[in-house]
Image (cartoon, rainbow, N blue to C red; front, top):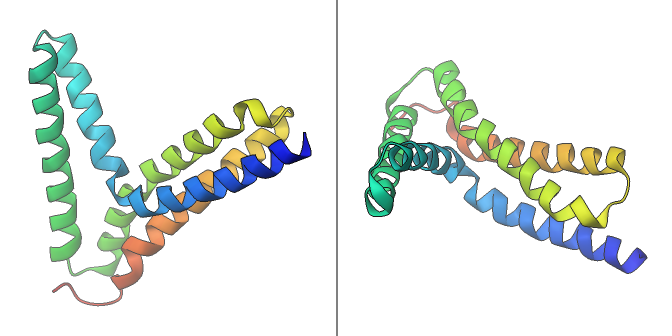
Length: 138
């Protein structure tokens, strides 16, 4: 039982590193997924829904990345970085919940681990994006 808990903690740490590297793309992924689901439910078919999802994810990333690079106000750039970081925190929470669902028997400790994992992923995404907030846009 102890070995499973240590393996779970190691896996959570490894996946948090992966989530740290992919956190910037959480918002475009969620936007693309929602658009693809909507397109599929309205009868566009699997290929059409996939194309709509890819297009909308690319547009969402392009718009937000363009805003982040062109806006000079540090406050507004921080708000855009928070918009990017919020879905990353949700994804980090879901990631830790999926791993610890069977490994951690206590519901309270599972929630503690999930909130900590989501917080770490969200704050790391915010730190990555807001590193240049004090500098003017290039």
